[in-house]
Length: 195
Image 1: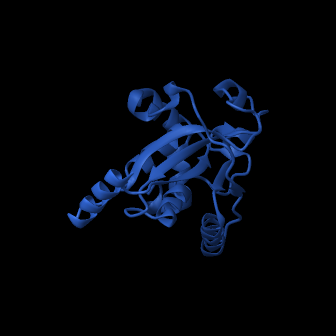
Image 2 (image 1 turned 60 degrees about the horizontal axis):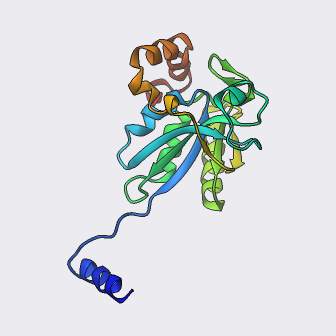
């Protein structure tokens, strides 16, 4: 223990920085494939993971979630360095990649498993999400259906869902286009769509 303390003190006195303490944020915005790219592109985002949350079934499968009866939604966990990007900045990207007015799913994906939500881990995240939701309702004169919910257990989705937009770019772009996601985002957000 004493040796570890000495090493830490030497690192600090030599100007060495300790590893950053990363945080995570969880968002649901329809098909999880479509949220990976926008978050992966942000400086300060360490990684994204497609998964499931919100329901009570432990270790749900894609088949269980896509049935719409599990209580879970497709979601994205964003691991980030709060020294490089803030939770509020992540929220701004989230909102501009969803249709917050749709209470029946997102784009061509229908059902409760595709609804939009911000899953908050603490009072600070909840306050930030509610503040931004209220601001958007006022500034855009729209009723926002996106839920603000307490974070439950997050289950990482099957490996073939991870980084789908990179592993299967042709299928991903066809799906995204056929689903009308980008057209609808542009209608809602204009030049800010997807940013």
